[in-house]
Structure formats: C-alpha cells, structure tokens
Image 1 (tube, rainbow, N blue to C red):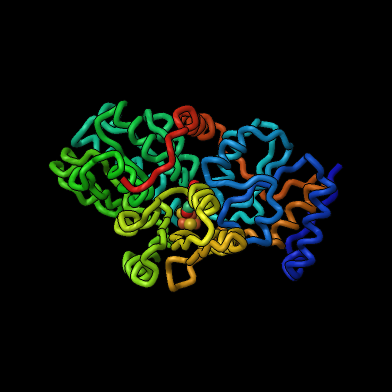
Image 2: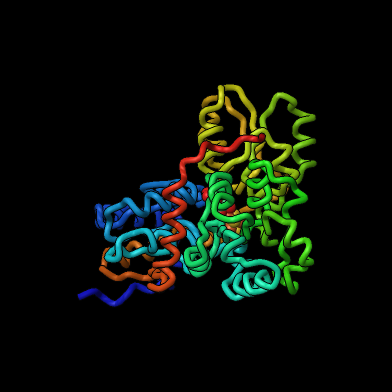
Length: 373
Ligand code: 13P
Ligand code: SF4
C-alpha cells in the first residue's frame, strides 16, 4: 500500500541545490518507471533533468512512444493533456504544478468557440464550409470540438501544412486561439491578408459583417501570446543597424511585422537546431522565450556563435516558470512512494474526439520547416 502523500509544504522552503540532489536520487530510484519530458522553455534547473526534450510536436510524438509507467511533464497544462490523450490508458501523466497553464490557450474556450460556430451558421454552413483548426496551445475540449467537426490540431512546426490540408477539405478555416500563427501560416500559403479577418470573440458575430465573413478564407481568433508580443520590428531594425551581417530568427507567435522582418521563422525546436547548425562566428537575434535564448547562448558560445535576445525587456513564460525544482522534487519523491500527485487525466469523451484531431495532425505532419517566403 502507498504511504500517505508527502506534502508540498515540506519542499517549498528547500534550496534549489537540495532539490537537485533529491531529484537525481528520486530519478535513480524510479529507474525506467518514470520518463521526464521537458519543453524548451523550462528553466535550466528543471530542463537539465529531462530525459527527452522538444517542441510541442516532438513532445506529442514522444508521449505516444514512451513506455514508462509515469510521464512527468515539465511543460504546461495543454502539453500534459496531449500526453495523456496520446499515451496508453495505464500510463499516468503528471504536471508538477497544476497552475502551469498557458495564457494564450485560455483566450479560447468551448463556450466561445461554440458560440462562434452558431453565429457562423447564420451566414454559412460551418460543417460544410469551415474547417476548425486549433493550435495545440488549447484545452482538450477544443481539440475534441475540432475532432467532431472535421477539424484538426496544428503546432508551430506544421501549421502551414495543416492549413493546406484544411483547405482541401473545406473552403474556409476558423483558426484559434493564436491569430499570429494563423496569419503567418496563411501568408506563407499565399492567402492575401485581405482574405483573413480577425474574429473578436468578445463581440457578437466576432465583430464582423456577413459580407466580411463570406469574403474571409481564414477567420483568425484574436488570441495571442503575451510573451511573444514583447518583440517589436524596431528591435530588429536597431539590431541590424548595429550588426548588418547578423541573422534574425523568431517564433511564429510573434506579430506579423516581426515575422516579416526575420530571416527565419519556426518552432522552438527549429530555432534551437538552426542556431546550433550555424557557422562559427555568426551572430543571431532570437525572438522567443528568455530561458530558451539564455540556454542557447550557453550551448553555442564555445563555437563563437553570438546569441542575442530580441527584446530589451525580460520576457519569460511565467506559467512555464511555475515548474520549479521544489514541485519537481515533490512529485518525483511521491512517485518513489507510489503516490501519484498532480495527475492530468482528460475526460474520456473529450479524449476520444481530441485524439481524432491530434491523430489527423500526426498522420499528415512532416511538412518542411518554414523560412520566410
Ligand atoms: P513550440 O511548439 O514551438 O515549442 O511552441 C510552444 C509554445 O508555447 C510557444 O510559445
Ligand atoms: Fe503559452 Fe506564450 Fe507561454 Fe507559449 S510562451 S506556453 S504561448 S503563454
């Protein structure tokens, strides 16, 4: 029988170094029973313990392939939900801090998306005319919505290819929650900006007229990532003035103007691998979360590659940052005692339909990495 769960209060006063030692010891005792998946935005004190790392697409695939009894997800809530949906039923997914959410994912919810679908039906036949696409940064019930309405999930790696697939199914797309990823991917596919309309989820009919809805090929939910809004075209301009030979790389959650001024646009995995593969002596301005950029700087400095953060402000993903060594040590030591704390379990009905939308994505992914058109 499992011992009573160890309380989090015992861990919050611990120093990071003490947690580090305890995390290593707990991992050793768990041997192959637990696998640690870590997203690239995790702070280094946590990231260094990950068995496998990646962007959202890679981590989704890994979650469907690993054998361990426990999947400890060092990332945010929607990532752990995807891991639960794609792993086997007997595997258990654990998120060290349940408050590690994603503010962008929270900008869309089922009630608002269903309202949008109903409102669209006053102008169109949504189930014949519109493919819903949800960015993976969304709750499981929205993925389920896409599953039951002929839609699909996308990530920052494959959004252009997914959009292409969607247009082969139906004439229009409702893309949520990130307007910037939707706009950039549509632009890459050659859709004119005039054929994309922003759906303001706080207004009736998304704030659009029936004529605007009929004209739009992509309806862009007006969600965004507050971290990636901190990067501005002016940051790129002043950097280029100082270092004309430097290259600029950013995540597609950045605004359209920032993507347009960048040399490369892609997922966190793409950013990592591109800078790692760069020639010695090159200089890079990077527009994505600070923990990734700091780590990248450390990893490539021995090759004399310079990595600069795009914003003069410190912008971190505060929700990713909630996964700290204290919570991490707490969940692992509980697993050693056979106590599962902070399990993420998606409702069966949502999981089945969400898996349909995720599986469609996994089946058609493999689109080449994006660069500026
Ligand atoms: P990636 O899939 O590129 O890792 O992005 C996830 C994310 O949340 C970026 O803000
Ligand atoms: Fe969500 Fe933005 Fe954090 Fe990514 S960086 S997890 S989109 S809040």
